[in-house]
Image (cartoon, rainbow, N blue to C red):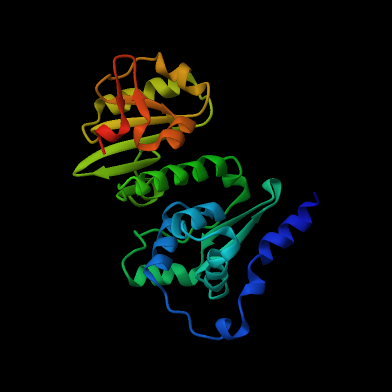
Length: 255
C-alpha cells in the first residue's frame, strides 16, 4: 500500500466527525485530557492505541470518540502530531499549549517539552512504546503510581535508572524492559548496580523472546531480581508467573 495514502488517511482520520460548531466552541479540559497529556509528557510520545485503550477503553472503534477529542486537542495546540516515515506511523507528542497547562497545574514534573529527533529516536521508538504499554498494564491492575525513565534521567539526572519505577504501598519496584540482546558485561554491571542499591524492593525484568533464557542464567541477587516474558505478562496479567533461578511466584501476590 502507498505509504502516502496511509499518512494522509491517518492524519485526517476523525476530522469528518468534528463539526465547525465544535471547533469554534471553546474547549474545556477534562481530567481525562490532563491525564492523557501528562502521560504523553512523561513518556515522550504516544501511539493512538495508548490513547484509545488507556483513556477510551469502553468506546468502540466505530464511535471515533477518541479521534474526535484528539483532533480538538491537536487543533488547540495541546497535542501535536509527528509522522514517522520509516514506520508509516503517527505519534502524538505534547504541544506547547499542553506543556503550559501542565506547568500551571504543577503536573509538568519539571520536564521540558519533548521534541522528536529522528537521529535520537529512530532506534528507541519500539522500546519506548512497549514501556508505555507496560505502564498502562500496571495502571489497569490497580497500580497507577509510576515514575518514568524520563523523570529519572532528565529531572533527577541519575546515572543508574530503570525504565520505570512502580510505587507500591511505599515500596519501589524497578521495571526493566529488554527487547534486544546487549553485551554480557552490560547485564553483569546492571545486576551489580541493583545488588548495591537499597532503593528497590524488587526489580522485574520484562523480556522479549530469547533474551529471557540468556539473562536467566547470569548471576544476580535471587531475592531481588526476577523475570517475566512480555507476551506472557500481557496474556496472563495479574496471573503471570515471575521467576528466577531459585523461585517462582504469581504477580498478583505482590500487587
